[in-house]
Picture 1 (spheres, rainbow, N blue to C red):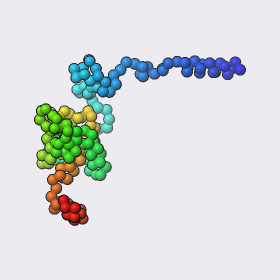
Picture 2 (cartoon, helix red, strand yellow):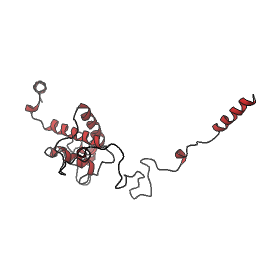
Picture 3 (cartoon, one colour):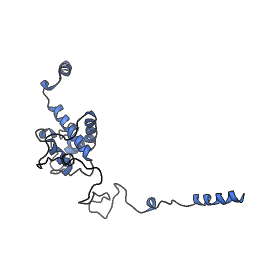
Picture 4 (tube, rainbow, N blue to C red):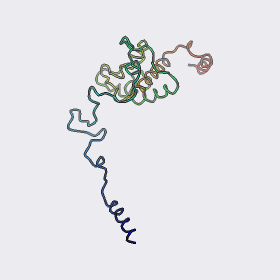
Length: 190
């Protein structure tokens, strides 16, 4: 009996202890929490300049969108398949459509209410290399900030692939449509 009691009492004492994880109890800011310490009022910060990412090394063209000559790569340096396009659509809808519109035409509720210049239609950039679009997502351009911290490299390329699909879908001629789909479109009167 004494032996059981000797085992039971320490267990009972442990249940009376408060949380033992100091990481849970320490003072900290949570994501999207406001802070008076920073000028923009947000506690969430971008990584400091010069931060070296830890992870697998990527092909320089994939990581930067630039070729060996420093110019934007002409074509996506990653394989394009249905899965990549689906991911691109999902990420575009979350990160890009708010300003650029679901068709990439620059028509959105946010765009209509912008006091400064509205976001451009992505269809104006059909002649630009794929690396250019990637670089705009990565580095920002004009009023658009960089999304490098928010959108991972592979998702940026997925978005580029989806933007190309959007551009084609909104600007294709009937001759570019496969014959079986062309007949269906003609029946529907499109």
